[in-house]
Image: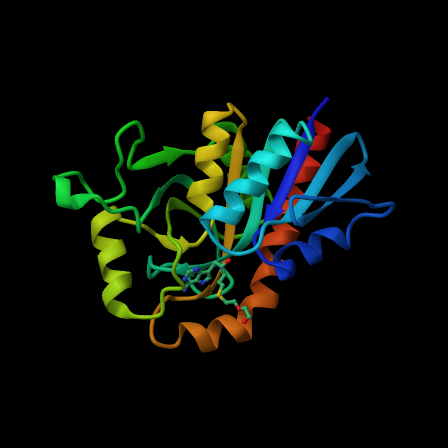
Length: 232
Ligand code: 3QA
């Protein structure tokens, strides 16, 4: 039987998901709250990690190692890079990288450290379920590369660097760290995001305006994915 981890970074990203569930058991652990629920035939643990790679690593590892989740789904918002991605649009990651991981002084490529790879892949099956769900419901979704770093990007210079260096379609602050944890622990993961801004000069302003609606777009889509996993 599947035990699903559902993660966001910010409270706004998981609140719309929690609203689908009843009889939630709250467990406090490692300075965070974990929400356990039964949903149809699925055991689910929901949490928001707090912002950034360190907190999201801690939460992902905790969901897998302490709560014994065997599949991880992340839902949230992202800054768009690919011009096809408009505010509100969905992206599912096929691979992710850490755009701020930099030992280039030693001749290594951006995003690389010994023992790792520039890109970490996500689970093909979960990604395909997402693409199928989009198809069946006539919802637009883009499959692509997501770049993660401990920065809220709100300028063209940094955005262009990330676009050119990694050919990334979107950027955020947690996806790659979560995917690295899942890859290392052999847990299939899905990273789903809806665009809240386009990481440019207006990003801060747009983010404040569209965080709630885009987080809901992502969460509502994730529920459809969960229902599909449940019926498999
Ligand atoms: C930004 C959130 C973090 O968890 C990463 C949103 C959307 N647009 C982005 C951008 N650059 C990087 N990441 C993103 N999420 C947290 S900062 C605002 C916090 O407000 C994805 C993302 N342009 C807290 C209230 O003071």
